[in-house]
Length: 414
Ligand code: UDP
Image 1 (cartoon, rainbow, N blue to C red):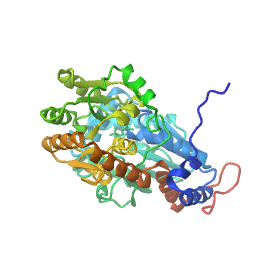
Image 2 (cartoon, rainbow, N blue to C red):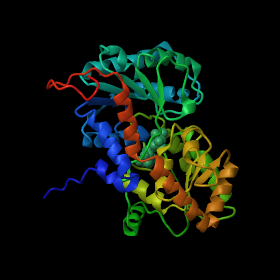
Image 3 (tube, rainbow, N blue to C red):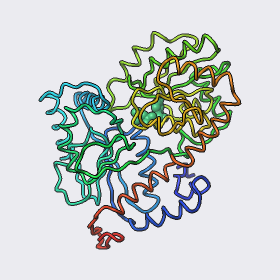
Image 4 (tube, protein in one colour):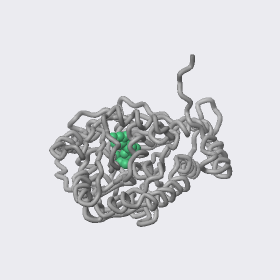
């Protein structure tokens, strides 16, 4: 018996995105049939980049491109350095010593020796693998896709990375305001979710109950939830403080769920530092379980994403897709997704977050109405087929002069 679950196809998006959109995407994909593209990032799971790559690569393969995915292998030292870079790109300080540069550049050089790239285009994600471009003859388009909140990157780090960034043919960021002073053309792609993944697909009440039960999460009181890597930028402390304030007016339970990405060495420390707050009403969970993410987002009365910086925040779109108005930090990509007071709330402080929690718990009808608008926002703008179309447009527009290995030329570009 075949037990392989079906892979979502572009046609599955027809009822959600409409025939016109799907037909248009098919035409754009046909121009690129057989094109061999590789993505390079730094983790197979944990975090939004891996989340999108796992679905996007499959969807692009479904529509005729040959899209692959490689992951950088690195030592703990290397991931220590790259997490500091991630933090500095979001505005934090960094001591960019010679030793850090050596670790960073050395690991990337080793990876370039192991990865034989003979593709028609290369897409490199975030700063971790960025310098890899140096080690290949540049005969095809190279794209740097930065998922980070670049509102205020640390200038020392930016100047160092710029030497690599400007070797690329295009840079993609998640918001207009993240564009920087670069000679390389910059594009804005808003990320998106896969509505058919285990994390986002419909679940029955029984399935939700079973999953919550597995982790002894009681549902006798409304659930307030934040689901994020344990990272100071996600402000888990602020969530706990806001929940405690809100508890003066409403009865509820808080669940903070986080996983640990292999490229984020800070997670365990942050998680441990929060354990002291755990009690009957506040639950911290560090597990890798996508069905639990889905169940919590569906069962929650209130979903928070109280980030201080956020490139986009897939968790926001994921919860909105499940009909939840999200209370989000008034930053980065969260601002793009939430229209304050319409499909969620944007908050600048613990007090505002607490007031919004109370408001949503006290007014279930309002919560439902805002939640419907939240779902519609995602349906219109943040489904993976929309994101795939942006890549097709980019690849169609790049000056690609490639001949496929069987001698056939690709679409209009040869
Ligand atoms: N995530 C998860 N389990 C967790 C915490 C997060 O699967 O315990 C997922 C979450 O559902 C989302 C991704 O990790 O798909 C996080 O992406 P986001 O853009 O919100 O933030 P990032 O981690 O990339 O900064």
